[in-house]
Amino acid sequence: MAWELLNILAVSAFAFSGAIVALNERYDIFGTFILGIATPFAGGIIRNIALDVPVVHVWEQGYLLYVAFITISIVYFFPKSWVMSWDRWNIYLDAIGLSAFALQGAAFAIDSEFPLGGIIFASILTGVGGGVTRDVLAQRRPMVLHQEIYAVWALVVGLLTGLGIIDLDHVIQTYVLFVGIVACRVLSYHLGWHLRFRDMYRL
Image (tube, rainbow, N blue to C red; front, side, top):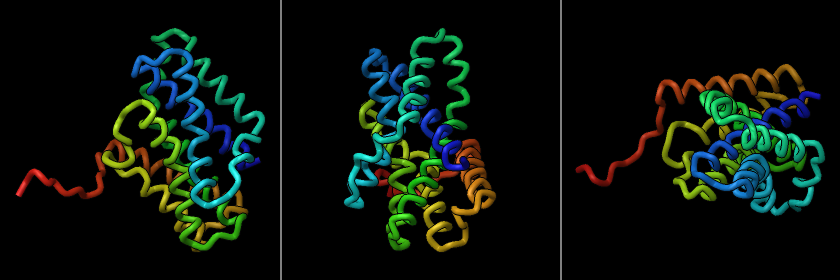
């Protein structure tokens, strides 16, 4: 039940994010649905390809596809004023998606008996892969590569679960980590936390 709820929250949050980006870039209805579907599901596909695992099960999720379609339809067909008022909450939805998908990726790698490196890798790819795909399709520089602290939080999920500090079979520990990562992502956004970058134009 815990994973089902997290998956619903993650898919809905990322589908919303993808659809909003598509509308902001003035994509048509087809483009909006493509971005809305790619954002929640591309991370899992990229993860499976990178780890040499069949990708077919990513699409065998039944109701989650319907969750994504319903969310995208709401964004596209509801009045613009409503959608724009919801857009101000997009950072929180994005944080929910990041946390839930990073946990999902870590759980996938643990179930597949990957070592620590594989768990961290799966957590990062699942958590940020959809957002990177969304930005690339929207012809934007991927936010995860140059803005705020984002992928680091997915790395933290992989590290804590891979080292056994957090047991994903324990519902309370899972939700504590989920909420903690959401809080860290939101704080890093509002407080303007950044990783250090090198300015090649300054001596």
